[in-house]
Image (cartoon, rainbow, N blue to C red; front, side, top):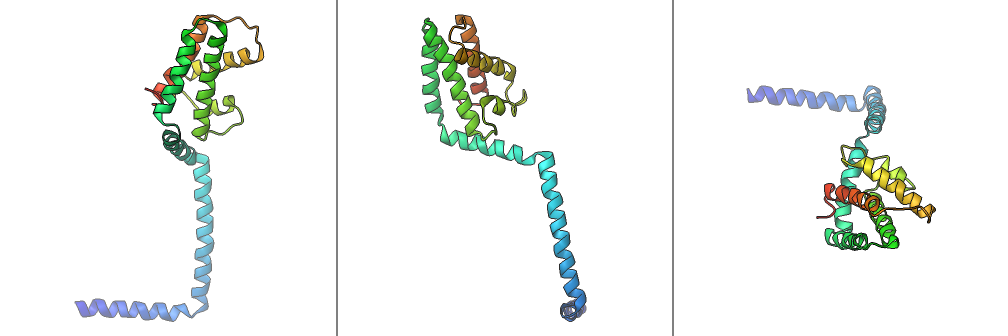
Length: 177
């Protein structure tokens, strides 16, 4: 039995060595190379169409974020924002929202979300990632109004709701305690 297997393997080896010097073998190698390139291109197209890499970048971005922005640093920054919010004067209320928005935008950048502005980056987030994304949008729009219109009248309640929207999202993403 063992002799039979050895004879078959020897015959196959001789056949392959015979073919390796022929034009047919050369053509088969080229055909294999061309087919590999074509199938490789199809795989790349599939990855792009199915947005598989987007998921990888988000995962990698979250990993990088936890190492680039330690929770302790974020918690300290967030406490400063909350202290501003506790003060009743209009300047601190405005700054609390602006700083919360800036902190959140910095985190989105660290997550490697594409876009030139925070609004561009927010378009890559949906309610499956952050449950209160609509509140984040409202808070960001309010922040833009405050920055561009210094006389815009604000209420403490409006500012609190906006800052708390960022807080909820940051806790959901586990960036602050």
